[in-house]
Length: 423
Image (cartoon, rainbow, N blue to C red; front, side):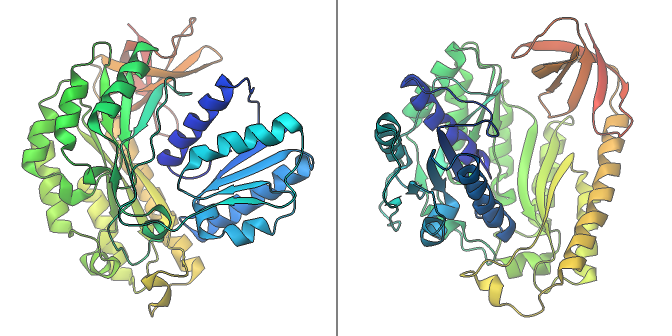
């Protein structure tokens, strides 16, 4: 079970692939298993709570199973997890692949650990990137982790303390991994990290990946809005396989709140870069993350965020409420916002976002679109266009993992995806 970000998902796939090579068979989490691996998240209080809840659920499902827990909650609160009866292995965010041997030893002997085995270390400035590579990915769209850690000091965020400083995967290793994924059928690769835009020579890396025969699309993970300067845009957009879709981690549309968060940009910088990107490619779409209820966020500040989202017309917004994380500066800030108010603002923003998405889809003409098919069920296939529009179409044939041409003919009732017909 994997919670949290794309980085966690990638790391879980690496571990899964290595265990499958050793003969392990994976099944649904709800099934009775001899081994449970819980990859935890700790970005919010809710994610920490949910991580611990799933650990307890695994122990209850089979008290004799080997229970391995890793990830951010393990790094943040290994002691708390060790207090959960039944946990065998606890690994933080460093040397995660060490759990492979420990898992093998316990499962081969069919024994439980006498007490939790804890693999955790405090990150140091000179720590290296942990070598990880995957040959196949369990999803149509494959992730490659090119970077880990963060050097920013955002007031609300615990991640730098539990992921360490910025570390980068060597470019030649990224290219080799991408080549193998494409050789095994992958059509689209997403370069991800905790702070993707901190990767040195990112545009050059995209250019190298462009040369891989059989790779159809290159997409980037979450980016700092200040990174997308005109020269960066020009370099990225010059590559035909680069997708016109950017996920910009905005967090807020209020300059006052952005300053309080200690973000590295303001709304003017973000809008200037966004407008330039749109001038280069009119089909581009933007997605983002927005937090509601940061300490000191007034109704005026929230309205500024609403207006900002309307100006940009984000295709999708990951909306979440501010969560107090002990150990961060924001936890001690005055003017904390009540939970009901945080939720109300998130609900208001979600309704506005739904209307924006419907408006975007209503403007799509009937020109054929390139679609990477991701799922197929009940004769309905589903996928994304290069600019991240969602579309579904009737098909008598399963065409998962293929890129096909679809003509838009309308939108669904909820207005959150296109309806098309295969050409």
